[in-house]
Image (tube, rainbow, N blue to C red; front, side, top):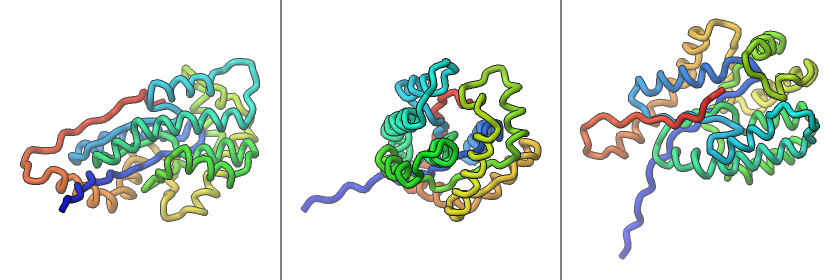
Amino acid sequence: MTTQRSRPPRGLFITLEGIEGCGKSTQARLLGEYLRSQGLVTVETREPGGTPLAEKIRSAMLDRADEPVAAETEAFLVFAARRQHVAQVIEPALARGAVVLCDRFSDSTLAYQGYARGLNVSLLERLNRLASHAVTPDLTLLFDLPVATGLARRRSAAETNRLDRESLRFHHKVRAGFLDLATRHPNRMKVVPARASKETVARAVTRIIAPMLSRVRQAMNEAAGSRTSSPRTTKARHALR
């Protein structure tokens, strides 16, 4: 009789979302530091991007070239990058029991290409299931603040991209889309007010994720078995924006 080999424990998948300039990339870094201080293995990544091929797609999508980009083209580029990213980074990390922190994921696709660009949201959701291999975040942190505040932050940065130059109306649609998604998925998506200092926002994030960490710690202990040494903390850097 053959014995079925047990699978490695699944980790925790946390995504960070919000309009341009909301501070989610800073919060991803701070959250990663906090989780590692708690002895957890983390992988930090971003979308579009996260692998060499997906980063090339990101550059093509966000480049400030003069050629107009059709909404459908933009969506297909996002999905192509996501499929590669999930296969090469996210699924393997979760299978190892890591905590994956991803700066943007599927909700950004719905907010930007769906609510703001006008593509059919239901169709985008179906395409996303294919691109993401049905991988769904355990928790999504939505950092919310007024559009004018976020754009002022972004447009004062040294580097801006094609989306930063979109109209105020476009970015208002993006924010409204995110908030509607949070209403539709209240168990997964938690809205974090992002106007306060980064330290205050980080404390709010810590309070939100605290109940979820015990499960990850238990899985890590099971994977460690009889080993008494502390788990090795690692992270994959993909130059978070």
